[in-house]
Length: 114
Length: 115
Image (cartoon, rainbow over all chains, first blue to last red; front, side):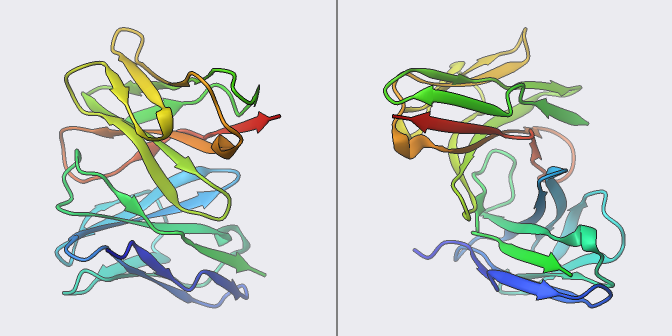
């Protein structure tokens, strides 16, 4: 059974540009969450999608957005990139989005903004 | 809201020695508790979780953790570590009520196992 797949693995962008990251959850999983990991702030929750609906959102500016498709694949978009957006972006999927259900993480996309 | 404190940012230990990684949490509601491990350039892997029942939880790779409600702690232990245990370990909580499915993580503990 394939795990959570995030593409691309590495990305370099320039300040002011926008970027789209992709996450393919484990087959059958309907919940997808996104996290940002930086050395200074640690792991911070961005948002969660379940059945194409955003169910929960963290404290990030509106430049960070996401969506989920009918096949549960998810994308997140960051517009007007800032140097501080450089981070490892992790996606996690779970079967039914229940709090007691294990979340499986992808390997992440490392975004560098220059 | 929930918060997690991992008191030790780094823990060096010799191979085959025991180790304890500390985790304390704060929450106004009941929570589920998790420990994750992250190897370099990898995502997070679940080691173990506490949902309810027995306060001693056993996980993968010989790790175990004990939930202590009165001390709001969930320390991770291993009786004998191996070089391959070198990694970063994250404690996390999730409220078991309310909307959404959001993990709140601690700042992580880097475990370095030395020969």
